Every structure is written in structure tokens, then in C-alpha cells.
Image 1 (tube, one colour):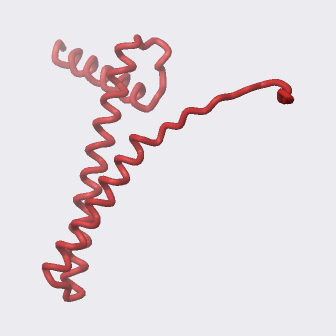
Image 2 (tube, one colour):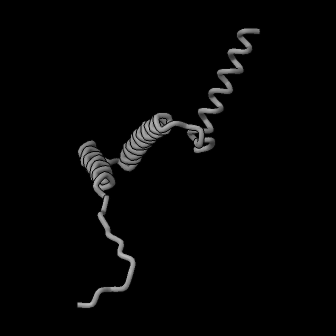
Image 3 (cartoon, rainbow, N blue to C red):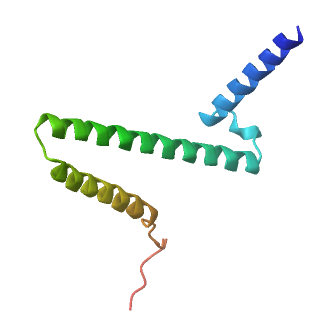
Length: 109
């Protein structure tokens, strides 16, 4: 019976964690819990993007082989793809813009 109770508690904990990661029931979370959830989501996104990149690179390699592409051509393509990915990541990090909002009648000079 104790093993069964522990299993039910673990299942309940996992269900609560899943709901929180999906953005449900966050009202009862502390700031620290929200930061931890945010960190988990960011790490998951990094893992997903890395896996996607590996899969795309492998698909590209296979397509190059099918088309009779040379190894040198493949290396050039790989370098371009990685540079594009790095440039995209850097652009996302530096895309903040400072703006000002003024509400009222324009001032005449």
C-alpha cells in the first residue's frame, strides 16, 4: 500500500508540474517557482533547437550525398548554415529598442 501511495503522489506531482509548464495554475506560485519554471522552459527550448539543428544538418548532408555533392561543398554549406544560425541568435538578443510615449497635444514652437 505504501508503494501505491508513493506512486499516486509522484503522479500527482508530475501532473501539477506539467500544468505549470503549460501555464496553468500559476497564481499560487512564488516568484522563485516562476523563475525556475522559466529556466526550465528556456533550457527545453535550447534542447529542442539544438536537436532540430542536428536533424536539419543530417538531412542536408544526406541530400548532398544523393545529389552527388562533394565533401568540400558540404563543408561550405555547413559553415554558412552555422553562421546564419549564430547571426540569428545574436540578432534576437540585441533586438531591444527604446521608445518614448507622449500623450497629449503636440507642443508648438
